[in-house]
Length: 574
Image: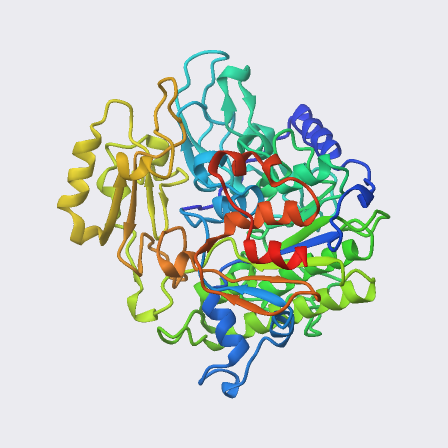
C-alpha cells in the first residue's frame, strides 16, 4: 500500500520553514518540579509494537518449543513482580499504528482524535502541493474555496527524503531524524486556512499527555519511527521538548557508536542482504531500535536524545519495532518470523526479537536505577497494536480480491487501487472506505455482501453500526469529514495484500490485532493480574493523574469519558 517514490523539492523557502518549525518545537528545558504526585515524578512509556498479551505470558512462563521451555524475558518478568499486568487489553480500532499511538497518548478513539489510519481520507482538505514520497499525488488548492477532498498521507512520505535515516532534514547529521525532515510541500492543505499545510500536530484534534504535562511545567520527550508521529506534541506542536524519529523505512546504514543491549556492534551493517529498509531484516531492525535506546538512555541521564545538556523528562518514552518485524516478515535466505501454532509459540526469529527487546528494557531499568530515578518512576509497557493471525495456518494474503478493488469505481481516485502510481487504498487486514460524493452507500454495501466469499468478508460496519463508535461522516454541518463510510473486517487471517515478504498484518478489529501487552510497574506496587476488559486509551488519563494532574485536562477524556485504570490509581493512593 505504501510504495516509495522520492520527490526532490529544493525550494529555499521550504527548507527554511522546516528548520524554523523544528526549532519552535524544541523549547528550553523546563523545570519538572511542578509536575509529579507524591510517589511519581517521572513516567516512562514504552510501546513494544506488535506484542500481544500472550507473548508476555509465554515469555514469562516459558512454552515448550522455545528456549528449551524456559522463560525468555527475564527483565520484563522481573518488572512484573511489582506491577499490574492487564491481560484483557484492547488497542485502538482500527489497530493501525497512527490511531494506536493516538489512543495511548490522548485517551481517545478516532471519534475524538480524528486519526483513523496513517493513510486515510479527509473530505475537507486538499492534496499536497507536490507528490509525497509514498505516492500521494500533488494537486490544486483554492484558498477559501470548496475542498476537493484528499487522501491524507501521514506516513514516511511527508519527509524530504524517506530513504535517509534523517528523513533528508536539511543540514542534519545522518542519524538525526525529526520534524526538520518534514517537507511542507508534501503535506495536505486546508483551503479554509489559506491552503496552509496541515502539520501532524495540527492534524490531531485533541491535546495529548505531552502537551498537558508540558503546559504544567514538565519536560517531555518522545522517540518514534516517522517524523509524522510528532503529532504526539499536540495542536500547535509545543508539547514536546525533545522529539526524535530516525526513519524506520530508510536505507540501512552503519551506526558507529551503537551497540545492542546484547552486545552486538552496529558499526557495520549486520545483514548486508537486507538493506533496502530497516524493516526488512531481523538483525538490522535491532540496530535501528538500539539507536533509539541509546537516545533514551541519554534522556535518563538528564540529556537530550543526542547528548546535549537538559533535564530528566517528567514524561518520556519510545517505541520498539523489533517484535513487530519478528512477527510479520519472511526474510529470504534467512527465515520466517511469526508463530508456529495457535498457542503463540514464537518462531526462532520472533524469539530472538523478544529477547532483544527484553534485554533493552533491562538496560533501561538499570539506567533508571543508576540515576536514582527508579523508585519514583512509573513504567508502562504496552503496544500500539498487535498482529494477526497468530495461527499461521489461517494466513491468507490476497491483494486482488479486496473491498477497495471491488468498489474501485465508488471511491476517490487517490484511494483507488486502479491508480497505479498512487498511494493505494487504506487496506491491511482491514478495509477502510470513503465513498465518492453521490455514490449510494446501500449499493456499495450490497456489492460487498454479494462478493463476501471472494473478499473473505467477516463483518461490515456502516451507518448506525459505525455511528455507535465514530462520528457521522460527511461534509454537511455537524458531520465529520474524516469518518469513513464503510469499514470491512475480514475473516481472521485474511490480509488485503499481495506481499510475498509479509506473513501477517494489523489494522483490523480481531483479537490478535488488538489484545496487547499492558504492564504498569513501580517498585512500590504489589503484583496483580487484571482480567477485566480495559483499553490502551486508559493509559493517557492514568499517566496524567499519576503525575498529579487532572485527567479531565485531556480533551479526549472529556469527550469520551475515558477512565483512569482503577488498579493503578488504587496502588498510587496507598
